[in-house]
Image (tube, rainbow, N blue to C red; front, side, top):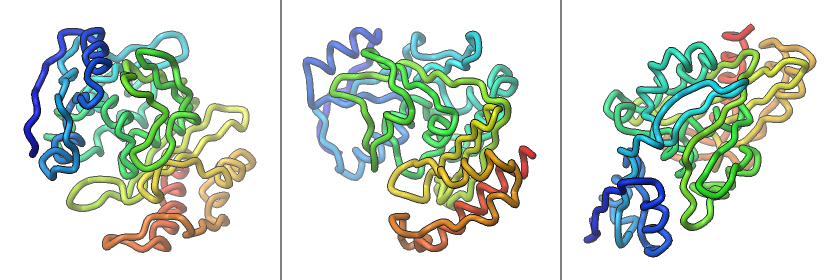
Length: 265
């Protein structure tokens, strides 16, 4: 790890001002992505600004027809929340599958969404549920937020404050996890908003989270496992590594989608 200065922010405004004045500084919430990166010397920030303890960035509530989750809310809190389990049970289920107990007790939703790791779980929920990423500057629709490998629409100095989820009629998440890390080798989140409005988001299989629009169209006509079984997923552009070739992940996309649909139907 390179030398750096640690700073604990006392408010979101202080963190925003400090980041603006120190462009080489990095924000840290739970640290589940940043700390391993620092240990491997893959990043050399001048400062680490800790915002994980800010009460103003935590909390879970339902407002009207939306579930609002603060950016610094821990995975464990999402997984165990009675509010989340009632509003979007699939989101609580997803949170309980993230990493291990230690990761769930430290990692945060905002940190996961900000880093946009291609194998992270939350991006699939954010995209499938058509959520809005609320920052210190604006509100970004999920379809416009995720850009690629560890790349988002966030601008320099922009900080996520909360995620706003529309409430679906029904939803489910199915994941094939790496046995060591718990990361998604492939995870599929299916959300049904009624009236044929189906969204399907895939994580882990490609260089970033993406919508499987062929499945969305098929499920809009016939919401069943059989509707997905007849589809073909192309391996072109999917991830290939020592854990699985692209063809294997292509098959996992369909299998995980079938499982998600079956658990709903």
